Length: 62
Image 1 (tube, rainbow, N blue to C red):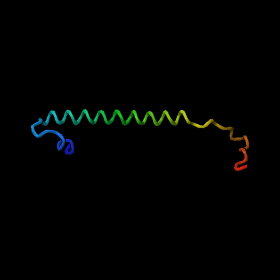
Image 2 (tube, one colour; image 1 turned 120 degrees about the vertical axis):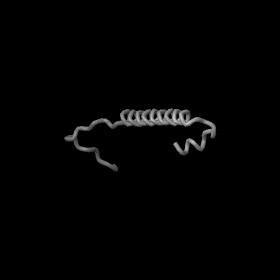
Image 3 (tube, rainbow, N blue to C red; image 1 turned 135 degrees about the vertical axis):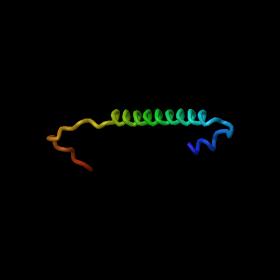
Image 4 (cartoon, rainbow, N blue to C red; image 1 turned 90 degrees about the vertical axis):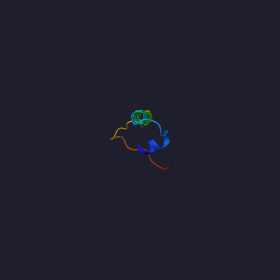
């Protein structure tokens, strides 16, 4: 909260500063989980097709 206090006016109350800090923390947490969900969805959408472990692999580099 010390960084936030430097950005707020000097005459703001401690209670108001604490509320602003809590709101910004909740917004940051929400965006973090939204970003995580988008990354997870990207990986699920781009997951390679499963392969049969007993099927021979194609020749590489030919």
